[in-house]
Length: 231
Image 1 (tube, rainbow, N blue to C red):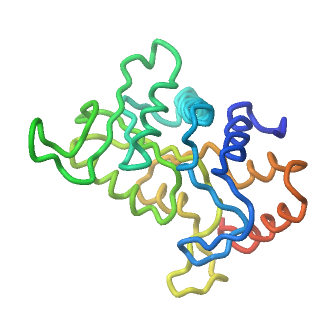
Image 2: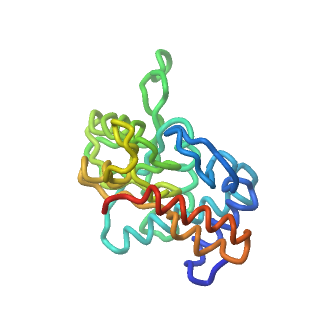
Image 3: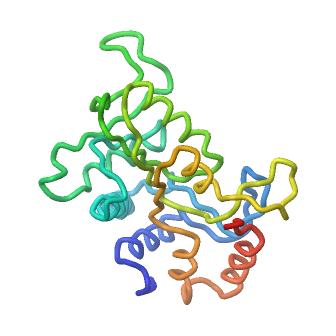
């Protein structure tokens, strides 16, 4: 991996390549765009790759916290992919100052027996909460999570995702030439909260040079130029 990347980013990118979470080729996205690469955090399922996942999320959270980007008391993972991510991220936080950090997640359907409820894990009423998930596509799932947390009296202070594709949202009228923000930019502005990615598109390009064919990198750079945001 490129020495230009911090160690935790380089290790995460290496694990993404080895596990197949990051692939290169031709992929149709939900937006119907044809992308030269595809990322799926669901491919991190071996113990080895989970160690890299844990370290990367924890390092990203700790770095942002140390730099005053956000404060937090709860790590929340939206069902379903966010559940193991929040668990790993909380476990990976190092140092006594994080010993009282709790994790929580929501149920897709409220439990109607036993203790009942729609949430599992630590309480977040009156607490500062960060959301941990894989990506922001349209932002719908994150909006739902924010609304749920606020509905329980929590305060969302930040969102951490694995990847920022750094590409603009599709225009509502289908005109791809129109200036548009990225999904992360739009969501961050809407809720006035920081959204941080472990890896960005630029990180990937830096890290894969010399590892994958130059033709694939050229396709990625052309894709980036076509769909770069207005800002």
